[in-house]
Length: 260
Length: 260
Image (cartoon, rainbow over all chains, first blue to last red):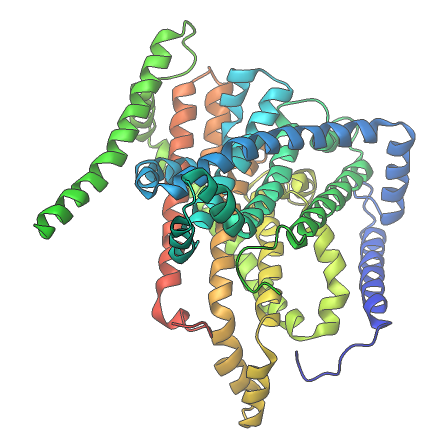
């Protein structure tokens, strides 16, 4: 959008490679110059990653983390969307519940850890509960706003066509609110991914978060720590991209607006 | 007649949410009474916990410690990420170059950085501030990039055609167009900062509200203090959010190019 000419096609690959190369070089040389024995160089991280892969611990940890996110996030979706739609549909009910939600929402899911451990003991269920909490509130809020933002013209038009309330909800409100709900779901998934790492550092003994804390505590293997951190970033990115794909699906893009 | 109706609905609006909260508290109390173990506190226990904290002068101290860390980490991120993001957003090639790196680093849970933060800064305030900085930096930078890129090219070209100097272009076209989006980004990011500080304090330091929660649990299972800490975290998070929301309403920030 600025004055410079449109970048050529080759530049799309050229500049990212240059920037990544520069960053890796900077990392490599700062490790060498400071002569640190603890912090790993890119090469060592690569070796650490290969070592993890060879011992098959990595896949188990990745699968454990993903399973917890899937269950916690899935539960939050199953409970949060119907609740959010209902609250958005009945503003009176929303007004009743809203202050309570506003207080509960900003409590960091991590702060629930002690309570989660009392309820569920140390284990999968505690981690899943924390992820559920982290994802639940953004989903509910997105649904409430999504439904509230549907222009009342559409509701009235639906009524005039004689739709029953369930039909109105299923055929007008839900599709109209869907784009906004999906954005909320994507944010919630990002939060779930953030929470699972923290929960695994404290409440369980498997998964990528545990891998980080464990490699640090047992023998200061910082190469494994950095390898795990990069992996967390890569998986988070994949989740996000997959979700964006969902948003661009045609059936999802309805939303009444600028339909082409 | 209408007036009377209006005041009645106003009263109802005020009364119902309070009644709902009272109902929840009642259910909580009954639930606690009915279960045999005396680990979890009832509402009165939590009030007692807060009074205890105030009497020992800990509450204010911990709140100040947490807010201190959030302020520094958040402010550092704002000062670095926004100018950088605006510059990168303005130059397409820079955005191309950095985008893959940003996309990988962004979904890394700030908490995954904890071992590295402790390695670099030791156990203490600096480590916690670093974690908050990391948690805020990437979302803010991406918001800034996005804000610049979503300025319609027409506005920039129009500004140029009117012969605005670069400085005037930045001040009179770029700045007003970007600020509304930035404020939304700032609000979301402050929420993340508040989430991260609690987790960081649970692991990396020995003061603050996050530490209060972990410490109350480990030193003698004082779950009344745990829940009191959670409640205070929720209330402060709510206040922070309301503060940022009121920023959105400041008139000089509201220009944008949006229709109003």
